[in-house]
Image 1: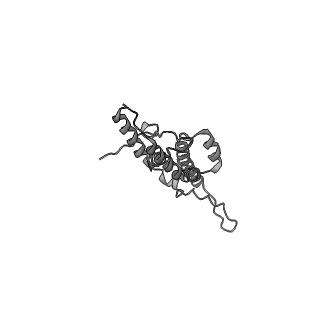
Image 2: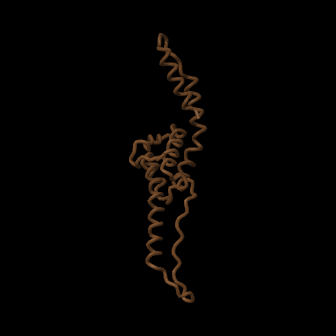
Image 3: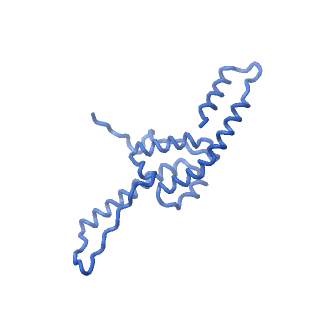
Length: 162
């Protein structure tokens, strides 16, 4: 069976923007990790991707020289590494606010960027839970209101709960 992956411009990889207040962090995180995993780039976000080791320069006592083929192979590996890491960063950068982008853009690798965004928002998760619980408790059906709509709103708040 032939499994063909969609192109990287596919709507399959579209992830809604992370809210400024991080209120959608839990669903954003899951969608982002799924989109990156679907591209086969998970090791670039976890920090497990290894940058190619540089070519050793010739040693005076060794006498061997680096060949053009070795240089070309090294450059190809470096290009592939940076392209894949940039895909991870592009996926993240296209779904965060400009303010957050300015904060994380200089962190280098995609894994460093993702780790910083996680650090920023993981602590907010408890606050989001408390706020959702409060909103759920305060939700009331208006006098002569539509009960179906009320239950739908309550269900939506319940589903958002982490």
